[in-house]
Structures are given as C-alpha cells and as structure tokens.
Image 1 (cartoon, rainbow, N blue to C red):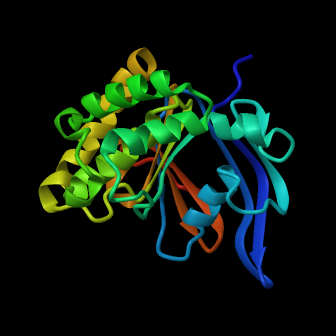
Image 2: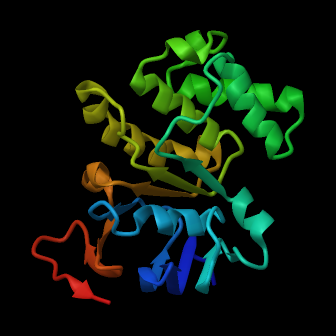
Length: 232
C-alpha cells in the first residue's frame, strides 16, 4: 500500500493554555494540490510549523511519506521543501549561491548543487539573473528565488506558505498558473511527487480544500459543485 504524502492524526497544539489546534486529522495523497484556508490566527502557520518540525509536537502524529516527524525527523525533513512567508536569504549574495547553498545543506556536492541550482532557476525564469545579487529583485522574483531554493533538493512534499505575499497584481494573477505548471512538471523534471499549496489565493488550483475554523477543520472536496462541508 502506498504511503500518503502527508498523514496527520489527532493533532493538538496549545500555547499557554490557549488551544491552537484541536484534533486535526488529515490525509493528502501523492500528486495532489491542497489548499489550506483560514482567517488570521486560525492555526495555519502552526500546522505548517509542526509538519516541518519548526514547532514542538505535543499530541498527535504527523508522517511525511511514511516518516514519523517525531521519531524520524531527519528523513521527514528531507522530503519537505518549504516556501516561507517572509524572505530569509542574504540579499547581497548572488542567486546561484543562495540556491546552491541550500542544496549543499541537504548533502549535495558543490558541483552537483550548482548544477541543480541552475536547473531550477532556469525553470522559474531566473537563469539570466543567476549571477546577480538578490537585493535588486522585485517582490515576484524574490518569491521565485525562494521557490527555487525550496525545490533544489528534489523534495517530495512542497509547502507554500502564503505564496502570493508581497507580489504585485500581475505576479499574483500568474501564480496559480505557475503552481499548476509545477504540478505537471515536478515528477519528471524535479522529482516532486506532492505539492501542498497553502494560502487562500491558491484555492483555484486546489484539488481539495481545508477551512480552519475555531481550531478545528471543515473539509470541502473540490471541485464538486454544491459539495457539502463536513465538520470534524
């Protein structure tokens, strides 16, 4: 039986007695787009942090392609490529070095890392700028650079946290098309089997949607006209 890309069972998280997540159960199979929606403070970033081992797991279980994030954290993290909300790279480094350094963090040799970095920068339309420093990039190009960094180690699970943050109108409108193209090309070109699209702006491309409400999940299958919402 094929392991799901992401399996979450009875996940709970509290901060100083306040419940952030309550009894979250979720399964995402390989090859799916997935949109996670919710108002500010609903627990989206908390959930992402727990999946990526950036926050301490209190109760429940998370597995990424069969790797338990508590007992097999290194193997689980190797499966994940994360595009965070905020830019967190050195703006005075060339693009190629920013992406290649991420690849070397995952164990690639310097030569292999530079080759992979060139490949993903080219796919995302940044090849001509790869030797330029990042400080001069537009908001949209910065997001593409961060996406290249998330993809460089060939992750099986790609998580995009508010991917349109900071984009101009044109880039925001183009984003769903970019994500769909990634889904078609990922398995063959980049080795990505699963794309998790996180953010309300990507609902157009989500095959399934999850709405966070009062620390619980309301799930709606999509696209199905008039599909019922079921509370968990």
